[in-house]
Image (cartoon, rainbow, N blue to C red; front, side):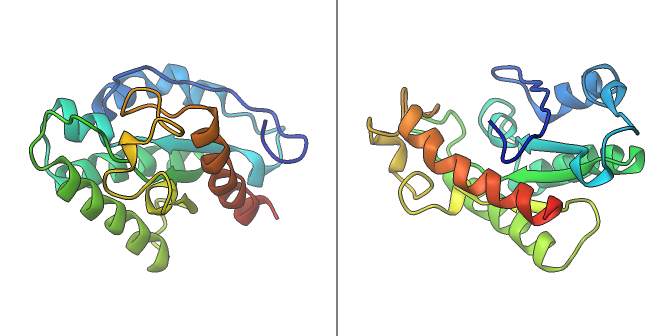
Length: 170
């Protein structure tokens, strides 16, 4: 659950890429924009880019630009944006996955530090020493299959997401 008494709609597709999310956004996200909700609580939390790197073999820059474009479109509607950084994978199909993951995560952090307007907060799960470090995905305490988190991993991630949300909503 999210901190406080916030409503939440989860829109997720296993294996979806940013391009696929963009094609579906008008119906799955933007149609749910509700002006009766306090503005600081109209939040899209986007945990993306990993599938673009892995499945589409895109570069870090291509993935970052796709993410930024998606977020800019949501911001035009009025959404607040929390971007979650990427976690490592045990067996990525893109040979450059880890290098690109670390680079894209840094670009996301840098965008927030530069106060770019396409995002409002970062949940830096990919920077966590336990679940975000290179090779962490081999730890079965936190990872189910080398890609997806177990409850113990989600508990760590929740602290980052909660902090990012709180930075927007106070």
